[in-house]
Amino acid sequence: MKLPLPNGWQPLLAYELEKPYFKKLQAFVDEERRTQKVFPPEEDVFSALELTPYDHVNVFLVGQDPYHDDNQAHGLCFSVRPGIKPPPSLANMFIELRNDVGCRIPNNGYLVPWAKQGILMLNTVLTVRAHQPNSHKGQGWEIFTDEIIRKVNAKTEPVVFVLWGAPAQKKMALIDTTRHTIVKSAHPSPLSARNGFFGSKPFSQINAALRAAGKPEIEWQLPDL
Image 1 (cartoon, helix red, strand yellow):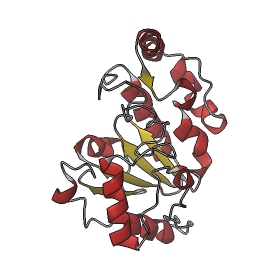
Image 2 (cartoon, rainbow, N blue to C red):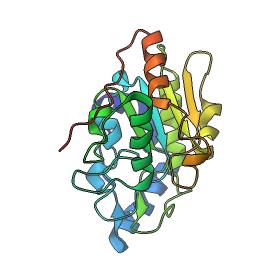
Image 3 (spheres, rainbow, N blue to C red):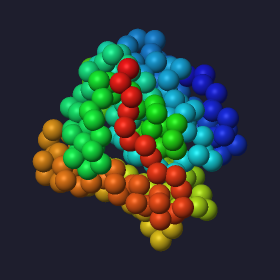
């Protein structure tokens, strides 16, 4: 893993890459890539940071583990590459998006247009072994991504943190809720969507919080590809 940090994040996180835990994590991921198939491809590991520079982060959507099937993960939580069928959690997000703000369901699950509008879509673990969910959990990624949450929390202007499901909601401890807005509900996965994700109207809540902060709202409608 020889990845340079994307520009705007470099001064904020460069020192993390020098820490013993990160060097250990690097060695672990390198060995995994040598002996196993690992997603996303190396050049996509920091995609979320690349597409949404620190200064542009207005919304932080916290994901968990990258998709673990072929050609799905490309470094943004919940997003899949063009031409790949949206997995169940993403399909449920699109249903809620239609019911909440009236968006047409697109023919793809490529969420890059959201990232370019200031939504940092970051998983708490940034790599996974093919077809083995959570296989890179507990190796050090969480320490690194917690630091990113802290850095975004340190921004002076308000940010909307979106926490779906219990693991994401544990991150509330890192967020100053007097300055930032938290939008939380059940996770959109098929296991929990009916128990509190459907009907939670997260997309209109995010835009209401952005409006209140004098920031541009998100255009949620994704183009067909």
